Length: 348
Image 1 (cartoon, one colour):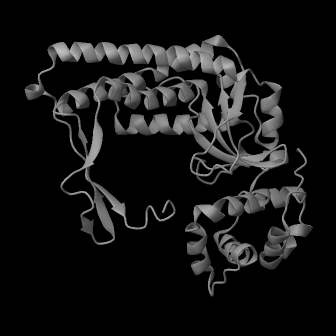
Image 2 (cartoon, rainbow, N blue to C red; image 1 turned 90 degrees about the vertical axis):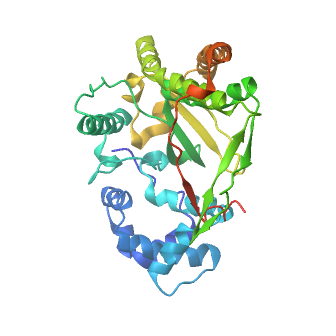
C-alpha cells in the first residue's frame, strides 16, 4: 500500500477538529484511517463541519444540523479554503485524491484498483439502465466514458481542482461549446426577457428568456437542433478513433476557473482505456506523469474536429436558407424552468 502521508498537509484547524470529534483517529493504523476518511459517518461529518466552521470562520452553531446547513451554503469566498482544509482528511494516497463523481452504492475509491475499473463499472451501470428503459437498446462496447468528472487532490503539494475526461469526451465538450458560437455567427441573435421572466411562484421564479433573431427564430431553432445532434453523433466515432491510435497516455494542462481565478485547476485528459488502466488512485499524479504526452497533440486533434464541425454547420445553414419553410417547422416541447430565489446568492 502506498504511504498515505496523513499529517504533512493537515492544518492546525483540521487537527483540532478531528481531535474534538474522533480523537482515536490518530491512534489508528493508516489502513483504518483511510477507510474512515473515504466513508466518514454522517454524524461525524456534521460534527466536523460544526468544529471547522468555528475554527476557520469563527461561526458557532448550537446543533450539528445547523452547522451542516451552514457548511452546504458557504459563499464562494470561503469555499476554496473549506475544501482545501478538508482535503488531507478525505483524500486517499500520496496526492490526497478524491473524486466528486459517481461511485456505486456501498463502494468507495478503495474498492477500485485503477481509474479504468471505476469508469468501466460506471459505464456498465449506465448502459444497463439504458437497456432497462429501452429493451431494444444495444449495449455498446466499453471505450471509455470519463467525461468532465471533478476531482480534488494535491499536485506538487498544491491544492488542485481537477477535471478528468477521455480525449473523445473532451473534444465533444469543445464541439458542444462551438455549436453556439458558429450558429450565432450564421444567425445573429440575442436573448431577451419573455413575458413570464421573473414571475414569482412561492420561493421560485420563472426563467423565461427568449431568442430574438430578427424574425429567423424558427430557422435558428432548426439549425441549432441539427448542430447539437450532429455533435452528439460524433462521440462514438471519436472514442473508436482514439482507442485505435493506441497512444496510452494523458494530457495535463491548466484549466482556469473563471468564477474563482485564485483556484488552481488542471485538466487530465486520457487518450484511451489502456491509459486508464495505468492510473491508480493512490498514486494518481505519479502514474499520470509516467505516461504524460504533449498537450499540443490534443489541441491539434481538437482543432481538426472543430474545423470540420464549423464547416458542417455553415453548410447546413446554406442548405436551410434554400429549403427551410418555417410554416412546417418541427414543433419541439418547451420546458418551464423555475429557479429558487437563493440560487444566485453566491454569484451576487
